[in-house]
Length: 329
Image (cartoon, rainbow, N blue to C red; front, side, top):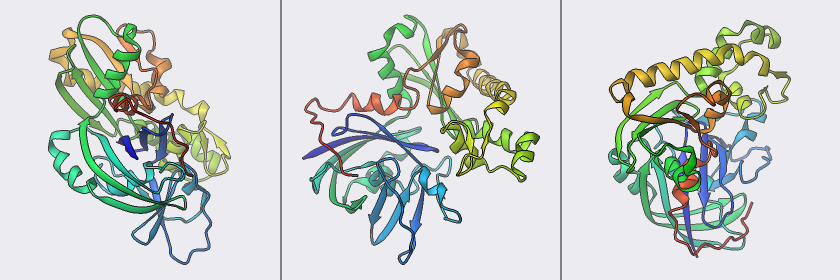
C-alpha cells in the first residue's frame, strides 16, 4: 500500500497528518535515546512513540519528561533538519498488520528553496524500523518541500472563506513554540514577503514566567524550568511532572508584553505594506494563548484549526483514494 504524509517539524511539536489516519497528531519534539541495558519500561502511544532504528531505541513525546534524570534531545530553533529522518519515523505510524509500504512525504519549511534538495537527499530512502514494537519497512519514494504556513491559509480559504476579507493581502503570523513566522500573501497565493522572528513564540512567555515572576519562583522554591513551563502551556498550565503548581493566574501579567512584542516587530518589518493588508491571520498552536487579547479587533483573524491548520492544508492535496486503515500503536 501507499501512504501520503504531511509533516511539520515544529520547534515544540511535530505535527503530522497521514492518509491512512482520520485525524492529525502532535508529538512533543523531544526524544530520549534509551540505553541498551536500561530497566526503564517506557509507556508509549501514537503521541509518545517508541522508535527502534539502526539498533537504537528512541522515545518521543511529553511522557519522556515524566522520568527524572532522563537525557532528552530537544529541537534546536532554526535547525529543523537535525534528526529529521528520525522525526519522520516518529510521525510515520504504520497501518495495523501492514509491514511494508511506500510513502510520499510533503513537508513544510520556512525557506523551502534553500533546503529542498538536502531534505530530499535525507528522506528519500528505505527505512526499516520498529514503531511501538511493530516492525515496518517504509520506502520513501518522493518528497515535496512546501512553504510553511501557506497551507494553513489555503485550508482557511477552502473551509472558512467567510473569515477572510474579499480584498487585500493577508499577513500570516504563525506562532509556534520558538518563533513567530510571518508571511505577506496576496489574493493569488503569491508570497510577497517573509520574516521569521526567533524567540517570539510561546518560549517568550515561558521565559517571562520563569525569570520575571517572583511568586512562581517562591511557590516551587527554585528557578522554574522554561521547558517544563512550555509543557504546561499545552497541558492546562500545570508545572512539573505531578502538576504541583498551576501558573494560570500569573499568565495575564505577561501576555500584554508578549502581544506587544509580536505586533511591534511585525508592523515594523511590514510597515510599507500595511495599507494593502486586509487581514492579520494568527495561526499556530501558540496563537490560542493570545486570542482573547486580540479577537474581535479590526482585521484580526484567528485560525479555527491553529495547531493543525498547516498539515491539514497540506493533506488536502493528497490523492482522493484514501482508505482509513487502523494503525499500530
